[in-house]
Image (tube, rainbow, N blue to C red; front, side, top):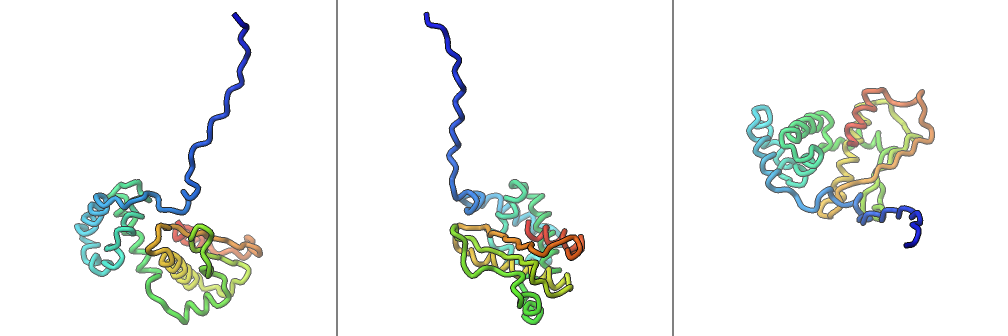
Length: 192
């Protein structure tokens, strides 16, 4: 019998990771059963029933409803609540209505834009450049942000990519020139 020799534990093998996990949708196919349940939930609510027809261009897209379901782990009630909040936000910020004069004032410097090229995975790149801030109108800035984010999502329509990259250039950012807390909170809410 030979004396036992201590063995060193083997390093665990790395899990097989799809290198494009961060690019593609959270799930390969839309969960049509859950989407139908969410659509029924939205249509039976009194406050949304009147506006469901108004938002049919948005709520009729299964991919949009599936995004809300993914965000709430397929819980239909929670997804419906999140969707109501999103519609309220859309009524306030109007990313689907374009006021070119206001956008021109806000976007002329390039402080907020979607890059002309996609990244190497086919995702649009949204660029925030704090160093060229030119206005103090928080409402107009948030409407411009809403428009730019909507534009970034439209760039991936019809592709398997459902995400975009956000690049923040905070060269001249400081506590003295940052926006108010309410604007920062709404910006973060829009980005998530």
